[in-house]
Length: 94
Image (cartoon, rainbow, N blue to C red; front, side):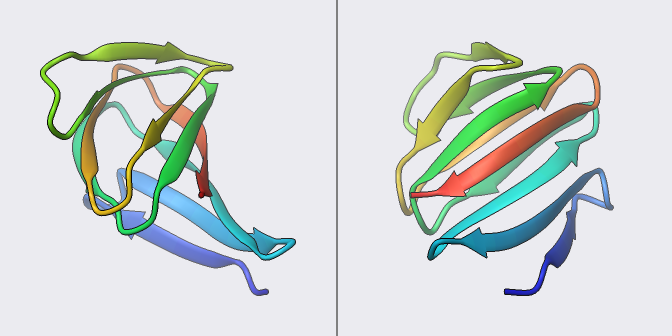
């Protein structure tokens, strides 16, 4: 599968997406800022470097996710995310 590049929020979030063994994934960088993402498929976000603070749709709690941790988002949902520094992530589509 070819590698697809995507840019969001005036290129403040950029990702490279591909597929391995029939499972889609992406890796990218979220620049410092606050963003909202919608999901079609369920996702697992793993912080590779830096830290993300996330709030899943339907919740009121912001949770810190430092490098090496992850969180999951249900399909047809979304989440808010804050990055205080440029942060690298991996997203697996479940």
